[in-house]
Length: 246
Image 1: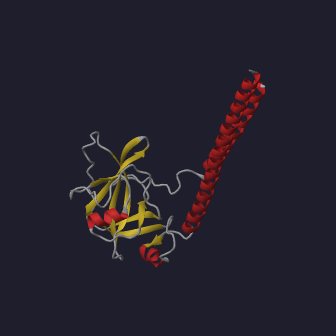
Image 2 (image 1 turned 60 degrees about the vertical axis):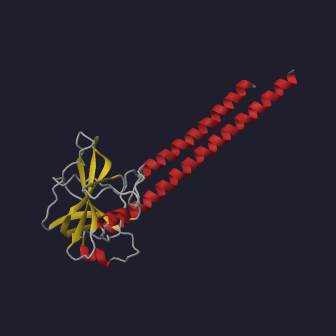
Image 3 (image 1 turned 45 degrees about the horizontal axis):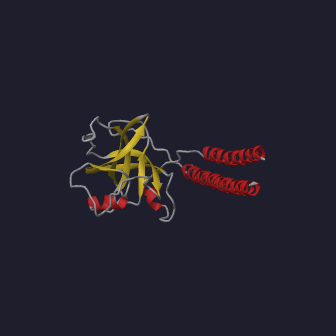
């Protein structure tokens, strides 16, 4: 009888050790991932700072930049016209606790052959989901300040919209993510391969609220420490539980 109990205790101890090892390894992996995120954010902030140290550029200066150079963080002043026939409403955008849309439209700089996708800012959503906000776009040349972003433009989304599943021909279009390929297909217009986020105060076109880096490197390091403390706590609890059983 004692032999059977000893074997059960032995198997139970082995199981607990395995669980603790798995939990600790998972926590260490998550902590390391947060450290990697923090380092990536630090590099991104350093790149943006070095770019913005060059000052605000005009569109010809932006066009003169090397094609393989990441233009994220570039601040530019653009003069041109907005395409009033096509614009998108980026869904599920929250500003100061209120749900709304970001207004995406095409901007044609005076010295460019291709339009640039511009995020004009946030507008409040109507009470009814069936109703879209009405935006009156200017049909005269305007000058706007933007911050550019190049690379991965779309965030996390549950939307499965593709080129084979498009909405009807009505405008504006409600979208769940920024997809230049989709927008090009819908408008039949070749676009510049980056986006401009309007800067400055809000107006009837929208409220600019873009932040290049939402979560700071310090927060990622903080989360990494939390995961390490969870791993340590798991080990301590397992050791004390083992001693108490013995």
